Image (cartoon, rainbow, N blue to C red; front, side):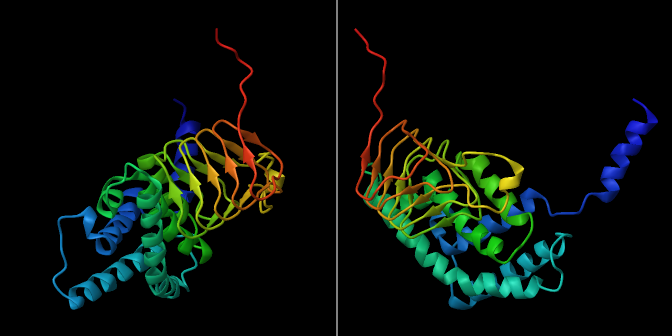
Length: 264
């Protein structure tokens, strides 16, 4: 290896902005989960004071994560942490609605405890909802790192900028992709392998809505692909498995895949 190669590497090491490790960021998110949902831990809080103290410490930890994210606006760490923890009660109630959607929507789900403890779809939604708060506060990198951590654990790739309504249900989770400018309404159910993506990956499309809108009470079955920023799936529609959609469909529509293959 040449000296020039080492000099190039050294330049990257000296110029690349510092960001806390994925382990530190995900540990903070996972500890917050244990406070919100004791179903995921053996630890129990004994008093309101202990809960408040734990939230105070998690707030300090968040400020530290933001401080050590060098590209973050260092005039706003405390303000961002304040917004985050002022919002977390509302997010908690949204997560309760998500859990209820899992229990009501999956015949195999026996209890909310089971959903919280073992369903990858619920974990993916939890990470999305907290990452979305940070994204709205223009925190760089950390929301995306959280999303990719959840992606690695659950198989669900949900961009933190996506807008997702209440009572959201992801069955199984594996292979789900929800793009950056996707809008999803309330009471939507999606199954494994669903892609809500863009028609084009042209860099010129950055900042433009390029992922679909899914209105309220829509069900999208496994393997369906819905593409395009102008594509709107109308309320109450049912999208069957392995369907490919690139244009809008009106409310109440049922779309099913018809295979050309015939088996004798």
